Length: 144
Image 1: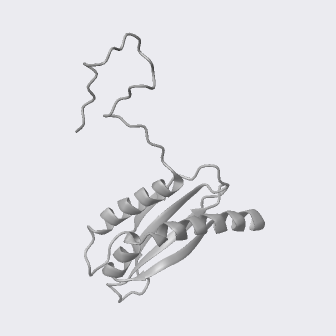
Image 2: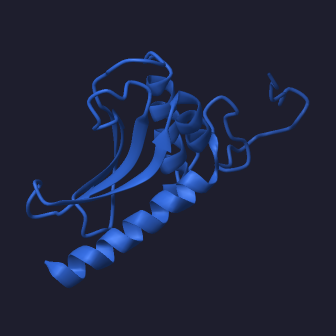
Image 3: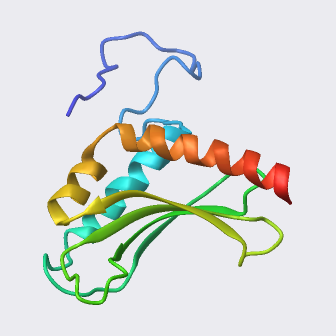
């Protein structure tokens, strides 16, 4: 850790902005950063489920600002087939602002644990989610 040494300097007047604290940097979170962090959270939750067997849905809601959408989320759920215990589905869901029951969803990836994990680690998932949000906004503007 770097320590700022001001003992040898002649500082008679405190000037804000000249010396800043190293321990608490100011960071701005971009939309891409929020999406990336949500994908990391989803990945950590996903690693705790067994490779074979049923499990409850894993959902991560993303904050949506300056949009007509109420909220958006990423969901990992088991396959809809009754006898398929290995297949997982990663889907993106966007909710209409007026009615939470009206939603638009797209299955982004379907596969076993290894396939879903590699999709979550891939950087193109962030881009795909951004495109999904933009398409969902256009969809809800045109249809509702």
